[in-house]
Amino acid sequence: ATCSAVQLSPCLAAITKNTPPSAACCNKLKEQKPCLCGYLKDPNLKNYVNSPGARKTASSCGVALKC
Image 1 (cartoon, rainbow, N blue to C red):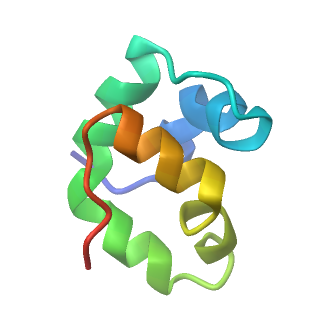
Image 2: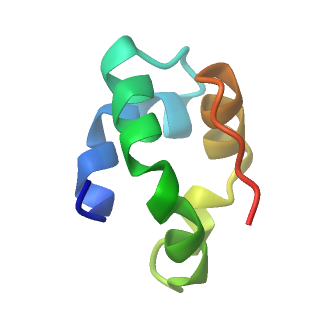
């Protein structure tokens, strides 16, 4: 998968509004998993990827945010 944070747009509601993630969100999150650590290093994306909402969403999707 190409690393593109835009691919995670289906997760936006889950991350920002604390709603349960959709299947589309989880699929994209799993697809982008190899990219997540890179996103954590990006000052523009870090706050989103490292937010409690993002961590909860990742956890709900069974994706570990371990870098």
